Image 1 (spheres, each protein chain N blue to C red):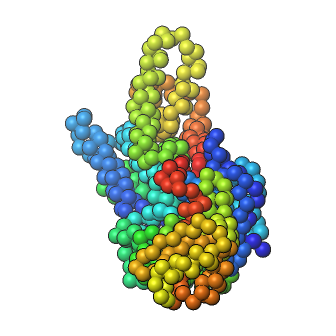
Image 2: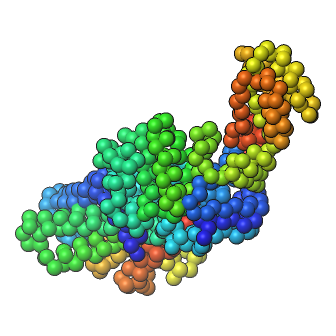
Image 3: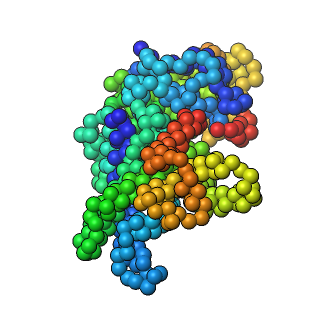
Length: 276
Length: 310
């Protein structure tokens, strides 16, 4: 446990040193405040529209940004150490491969969690202070749920980045594959699902279809943040399948957690097989 | 106790056999030189001792335990051949990180940095370090926690002559305190005075093994005598004719001295009879150096041997 924390601690202090933590927090805070104020601009108004609309917009933007940041943060974890020669050295220390990877996960995970908490937390406080008649409790609940699910989504993509990082032997390849993962889950997956829906002409089992959304953590994340308001009219595109999903928020949370646990477990297994 | 012991160890990567039937051991208070061409199996042997992988066959025991066991690795210091530390961190921060991982006291960090000559540079980022400075940092890292077994892969690369001499003195001190040291190097004349034993690897097998005198015996290479005549060169040559029991000695005269290559067991009889003849003014004896012995065992294949994989 000590070794895990030593590794995590270095990752954390690295992200403080290279200003990652500050930069991500700033981006999140700016984004949240921007959306809160100008989210209703399309309807000709400037100012705070409503909590559900703001969260829905934030979640839509989050699915682009969070996976990207998580992948960037973590793609060179193992392959970077390997290229610098420090992986070989670390493995001659009293430190197992699992401890190294878990330490990295703890460090990266904490970095992302802190940035999310600070960035969106500050935005939430600003909204409470600046908007006069906002319902504080419902905002706090919605924002809390949003921050929690954002952290889980980020952890999931950190784990996916590890999956790449433990497997390849060159950093540029890892970067390319990380971008491919982003591309697949954020852009391609929904299009593919839509394509399947149209091509199948309703022959597919309608009870099965909503479950396909579970195969994409970003879809789970959006569902979680939008469905919670009980207003499914916000669900657009393939996401409307989600209204037929027979699992409640609990199931969605569990699915998001699984998206952290399973890739991380696979990365741990693959890392054991890596030749050093 | 052995620092490490390889017993009949073979190892293959995928299909390629990189080590076969290697027997090697190191005792405390001993410096072992590990030599061989690129791909001879030096790095693989070191990785096996470090516990980075398991041998395909044979047994590896390290410090009376199993290679790779945390209890064991805690007492091993290792300097890899080419390590780029974290460029954004200072020397002190890096060493503190590694000290924490090794469970070594953080107090020795500044001491070690001063000992390797990084006292003034310990608070600058390592991306500004030269190759030699990185090497020193690597060395400080290897010395963390007073290791019982120290494995150094090309430790003198990038070091200036003074730093190299300092390093060897340091190794001697450590050896005298009971540390077992493994030294891999291609700079054979540099390490020759400091090693207690040498193992020469070729193509994954130990070709020769022992201390320098025993390696010389195994190699049975001629000793070169440089003779200065008391009178004229021709008188000395005549004395040589009479003295030598075996024929076919390599002789050539150079700068008024006679160079003779003689087999080790013919050396003393020849010298005795030359002394008796009174034609000898001065004599110097050149034993084959470690480099000569190395070339002898590796074979004259030269570059052809230097390919190989890994």
